[in-house]
Image (cartoon, rainbow, N blue to C red; front, side, top):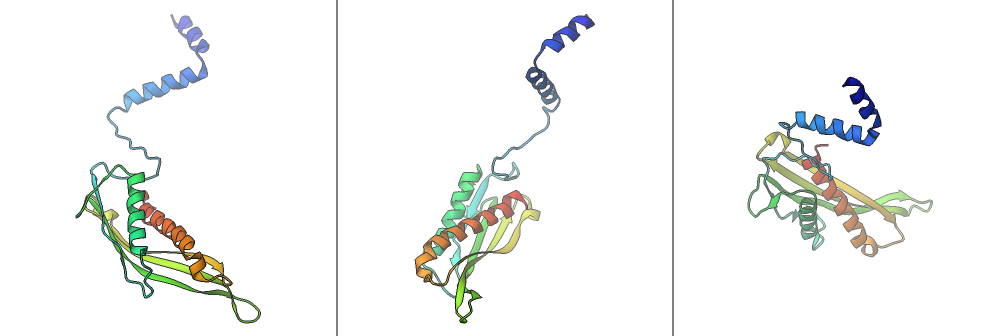
Length: 181
């Protein structure tokens, strides 16, 4: 009997052996719960709902539409990367915040004392509340910037740079809340 088993086992392909071992291992782990996510998000199974409050613009320089852009971008990110139900009011997890800075300033100066490069930056202060696991709650400011050639007027590059910066900030907010970096 042992000889027949050994010969049969040798004839089975490597992939079939690996699959068999994985299947056997899985049968021992049926009591364990494993959560997988392609986004890298790690969200407790008890969290079912998400709410995102409108981000007010409290910066000295107010850009119309920026509040809506940030709020919508965060909603879109959460819809795409989680299975949570987005609700009005307060969810199991909640985002709220405000835009605290929106500015451009000279970054480098050339030989004739003129700005060669400008830096455009946006700062968003966020309060994230996790009512299921309060230890994961945070209040933090996120700043991102993009540099641009000073020969260009901000109005020429503002839309493109704003979109890029908002995308980076939203990624940071989401990662801080759900990827736990």
